[in-house]
Image 1 (cartoon, one colour):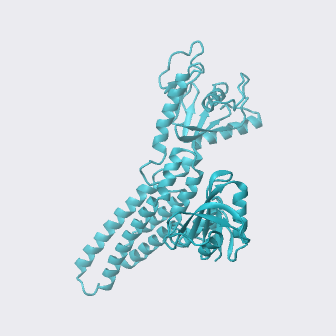
Image 2 (tube, one colour; image 1 turned 90 degrees about the vertical axis):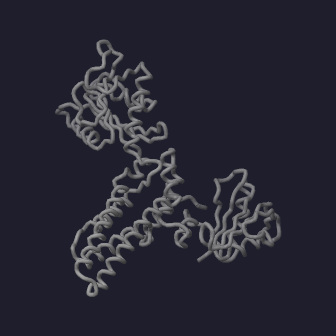
Image 3 (cartoon, rainbow, N blue to C red; image 1 turned 30 degrees about the horizontal axis):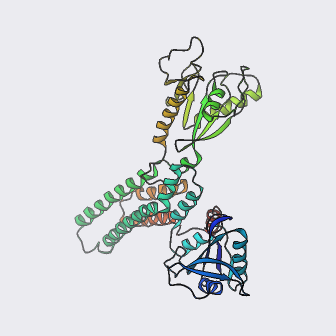
Length: 425
């Protein structure tokens, strides 16, 4: 396997750029540029020179002997000046050394996975951390990258392994023990299997990580001319939808991503719900109904009852004559001229969001991790009175949980994951 190199800090120009080298030829490459290397994990100032002896830059050099490094391999860092010409000169000199090549996106992290320094859940958490845009996304990604998801899954695997060992003991010594003793031991194991399945299921049923990234879907619904587009523009703080007194102005869904108080939302304006013979308008009504059914939160602006019991029923256009009082059943009154009414609505949305998003101190799984853990729960709860079958079900559950950690990850899966990373990470 060739030794790889890349800039692992921000894109130049910058004050400092970190050039990272990882692999079996890392120390030889560093010595070719910097001369005698400093003691491991001690920064030392060195002159970096090309093959002709010309000075490229003066940089801090740090060497990290494997396998206790970020990649599990010998690793060197040059902390250079961050100008483009400096980086180009250093990378150009490295590229002509034997056994070296530029790194591909995510290759440093992929080698960490391959060499057992991290597992798949930690790698996925790191990928999410690099893409995090909100505080909630950062916290969830850091939780995974720091190994809390991995620790939970490994704990479940250890519990399954212990239960498997006890089942195997029953099978191995069934002839030596009396039946009553075997039955009591088996029933105790079954009870512990149920407890473990419930523990895993609690985590599976928690909100997924994707809600933090994709944003909560907030759909604004109601009849034509009820103020839906106006409300979308006010919440989104831009003129995303055309506002007009003409009925049917909005014929399709209009989506506006918004980040508010560290939470991502996708606000959706919909066509007015009305019976119509216009085929285009009818398509818009159908799409509006579908959006309302799939919404995380519905903002309902009609004077008639909302289509969902959990909708936030708003008294819109409260600044118009005759609409000043809040009717019974409505959650909030909204007025275009009253900024406080919008702040109160955002407060209600944030309160709803808190119950729908992963908790900062909890373990949040990605969708595919939830599916795998759900399959493990099914295997654990596929009840049988035959210890031999229970032993096989435990084996299946452990294999499924191992898949969450990437122990059976395919090359295609890893290519897709590490393709999300930047070069140098």
